[in-house]
Figure 1 (cartoon, rainbow, N blue to C red):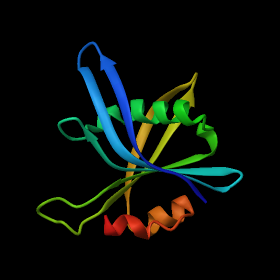
Figure 2 (figure 1 turned 120 degrees about the horizontal axis):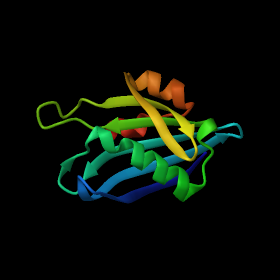
Figure 3 (figure 1 turned 135 degrees about the vertical axis):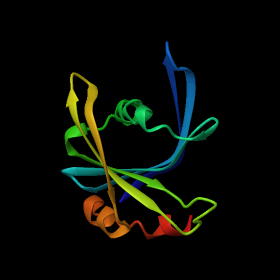
Figure 4 (figure 1 turned 90 degrees about the horizontal axis):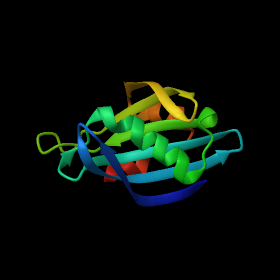
Length: 130
């Protein structure tokens, strides 16, 4: 059951990088008592495409904002196509270690749409029409 379907903003300050405003569309599903699924779609910086090294901060902020259990949460990242390939969709399964309220060793694995649905346990067909 989808309980969150909204735009989401996250702000980050870093001494080296400065201030960043991250934006995405966030979907949160609670279809099983022992698992939540988070789908982060079209993550962007205030100026252009999202830089992958900031994903750790986004994940930590979502866990904090929505009081999620990181041990029972499945994470899927979704990007729509580009100008060169408007029909292309990319899905990534995100895994990490949760240590002292922080993400460590974040890993991303490119997966197919079908694998994203199996991994999440949710129908993600609607993402293909975005």
